[in-house]
Length: 257
View (tube, rainbow, N blue to C red):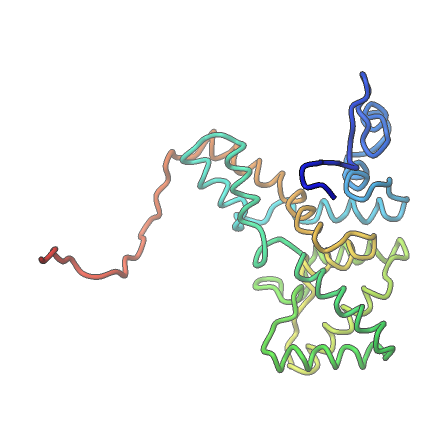
């Protein structure tokens, strides 16, 4: 491939027509839901009815989270620069490995699924092998555990229900569930599948790759980032300060030559 030649399979403009993955944009505007259009742009085809229902539920799963890192970052930036675009960018940049993104859990699921197919063993044997490996390496299982939802993460619970009613609770779902249960049995803990883990399960089952998952989670939380940032612009305090910030540097000193 010539490094100077660019190509895109996503859209083109032909005369007065704008084609998105081959569909005229006017037809998408009038006939297709926003969530189905997002799926089309990402995957190149419109979702079937079951995929559409699951994808819609995923996009509604993390609209906001009580001033978590993403909306908080948006508000901090908006307090210093009351421009919505900058605040939105800050909120998106505050998402990733430790907050919001299900990419790690998605990669974990794909690795476990590949191992399951390679070794041709039972789900129980696979779960025990994975849990043993992660405990020996002192690594956490991505997608399980939550600091406040100790019984169940209601968002994860609802996505699971949507998957099951569409008969899309398949091998990847069962693999992750078996690993979570085995982890709890071995450790004596009661770690729940959190929303990131369930998003990874659901998105995997409808053909979304791990590298795409963080972007979809960002889309889900973007309305909350916008709403919080607009609130800060309209009602907040310019250039907010951190109250009672603890200083733990050196005592006062002077320059000596």
